Length: 119
Picture 1 (cartoon, rainbow, N blue to C red):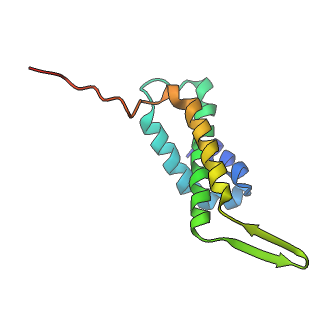
Picture 2 (cartoon, rainbow, N blue to C red):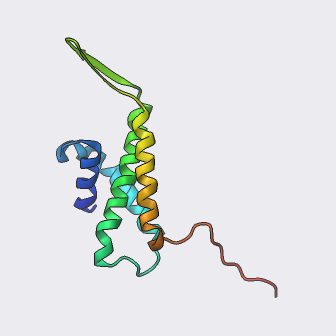
């Protein structure tokens, strides 16, 4: 897996790079999914960074869904209460959609189907 993807994911998730290693399979899956959708020969060296950012965003979105599915976590320390709810997954989805739009010209159009007619 590209270390740039894992590093970007760690930054988005607010995790240390060491803690993010536990989520490396999610990053790998995001990269494999997006790489399989690339138009042949479209990923240039200049676009590699954008592609890695999109992979990180997709992995982060899936991370937020997994954390949300595990239930809301909260704890108190004196007068301070910290809680993690599910609102982060909505923001992560918006981030992923924004990045998906940015790399859309590099991806095959899943809505388009070429069929041979007649004959």
